[in-house]
Image 1: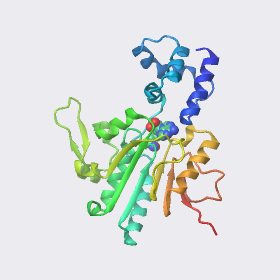
Image 2 (image 1 turned 90 degrees about the vertical axis):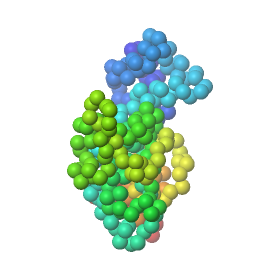
Image 3 (image 1 turned 180 degrees about the horizontal axis):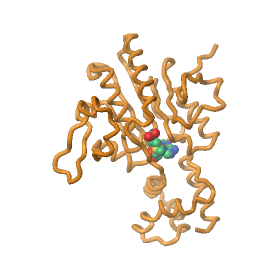
Image 4 (image 1 turned 180 degrees about the vertical axis):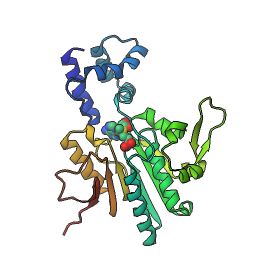
Length: 271
Ligand SMILES: C[S@@+](CC[C@H](N)C(=O)[O-])C[C@H]1O[C@@H](n2cnc3c(N)ncnc32)[C@H](O)[C@@H]1O
């Protein structure tokens, strides 16, 4: 790919999603665009970029973003975070809370929000009679479809702890490969929506008791990261927690946050 065209893609992707492709990742970009370009019978990357930029409907931009995002995820990824989350729910229950909101802000194909829902239903078994909800958002409409569908191959659900898989998963019938679905009653807890984290302000009012923003900030530059975290803190309940990925941090935001443990933050209240 012509280096000038690559630079145009980099700038365009950053502008649209906040995601920074590293320099020299031409092969990665080509591989991710290949299928879509083949479908459209387009042979030049420059021509495809022109198409995305001229498409008024925004549909081709969505296809481009879906093709380019990295969606790696798993059930109960970073188990320590789920222990901290369970403690937070217990604390809320001890204080007699009746409303609890979680925002999973880069939910990918659903393994993360469904893990969150399982922990919530486990710790607050009476959740159906309370105001308990999880909002799961992502920029990629393909992964959101998988997340809503809530059916996963057996190797994918192997990471779900045994006590939870027995309660919250049901074996799918009639599929060639063994697969499992999230139980219908749990599905009522989670709603899914497309949301671009770099488009501020966010449409939700909050407050959220917990915000998961894991393994997405790494793709953003420092300025975008700061804007996203600042906007999230505004939506966080004073007793709420913001959980970032293990290699992410709220660096430079000490005036706004208190780090409670690795990659878990609380709002710093003004003195
Ligand atoms: C590596 S996955 C992480 C998934 C999950 N949070 C986890 O930790 O397992 C990153 C996700 O961020 C999403 N993403 C990337 N840029 C985004 C943006 N600007 N707004 C919202 N989601 C975005 C991608 O579509 C992808 O599903």
